Image (cartoon, rainbow, N blue to C red; front, side, top):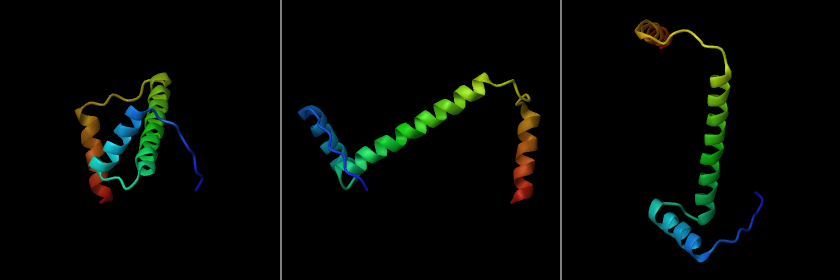
Length: 77
């Protein structure tokens, strides 16, 4: 694992320390890693949403569509 040092103003350092203590993180590094992972997930989701918005319309998602979807899931169980 690589090390990265960051500088924070006192107010942000205090906030990070409070989050670590109050939310069950062992270290500030664990907290920061979790924030980065969540940001990666948000960026991936945003990309998928933009891809979907730019694609051609698909089949209508009506009640029949969801009934068929549930039926397919039941047969796989």
